[in-house]
Image 1 (cartoon, rainbow, N blue to C red):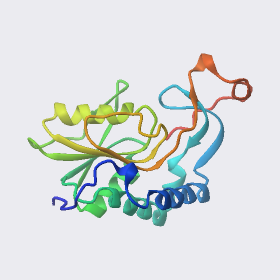
Image 2 (spheres, helix red, strand yellow):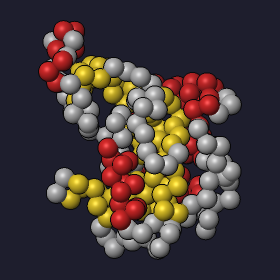
Image 3 (spheres, rainbow, N blue to C red):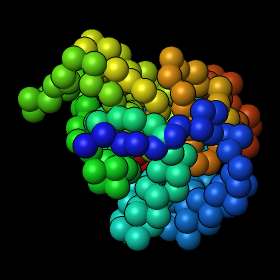
Length: 205
């Protein structure tokens, strides 16, 4: 089934964004998904803050609400399939697909790269929405976009819950997020003293 919504374009300028950001922040805070400490991100960068979306995904009412809010950013966008990278994008990706009443598939790691397995394929020109939980540099999203292109599909947009880099990650298709935050990140050899004195952890996503 193909969506019949109207995509507004640059979603961070969408009317009411402040209210949405506040609601999303409240959800993350209430579910203890916004962590503070010393974390090594998927990108290899270090940060004093981490979004652990798995904490939110324990609670289906919150997942449904986040999916609804994200769908509000996608009004008008036409797609027939949602593609999410495992593991982080699985729950929110499936929820967006459920509310869209469209197909849901996922990419997973094989030899340290994301690939389609389990017989997943694209029809020629199939319209695909890529959904992720959190992006910093957007490496996994770009891998998914590459997968769509190689598979003969057509990526139409990227939708994420949290953009840690306030729109700095650029893709070939429109990108929207529910929450844009700009917590500092650092290479391992350029840590500020207050962060370097804390033990680093890799919480996963």
